[in-house]
Every structure is written in C-alpha cells, then in structure tokens.
Length: 69
Picture 1: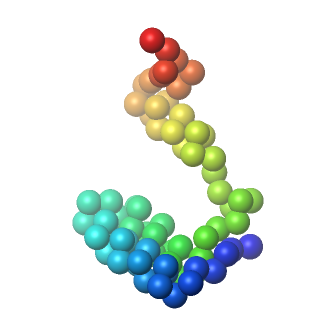
Picture 2: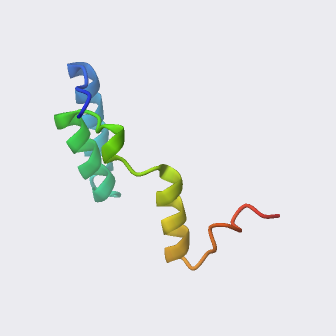
Picture 3: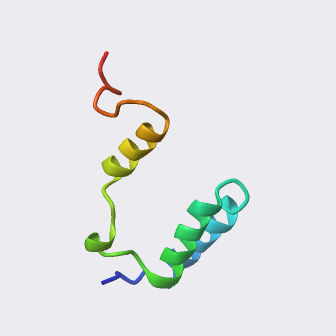
C-alpha cells in the first residue's frame, strides 16, 4: 500500500528526478515512480543495509569487514 504525496511534494520529487535524469537514470526512474504513485509501503522496500552490502559484494568488498579499522 502506497502513501500518496501532497501535490507540492510530488512536484518537488518530479523536479528532482528531472535534475538526476542525465547522471543517474535509475534514481530518476525511482523518483518519478514515487512522484506519480506515492511512497511504497514497507513490505515493498529493501532495507538500505541490504542494498549497501550487495553493492560492496559486487565490488569485491566483504561487507562484514567494511567498517573494521
């Protein structure tokens, strides 16, 4: 279940998407979806730690040791 954004907030997110379009089309697509459809429910989201760790693994970095001094 999505949470609808107020019109002015949706417009601001759409503007942000337009600014990001050239350098980060993936981010722009997500922002456009949020502007048009509202914020996704928690059951539709992936925790940022899981996304971060996946990117570390793609880079060949052990995500369990990234913060070890």
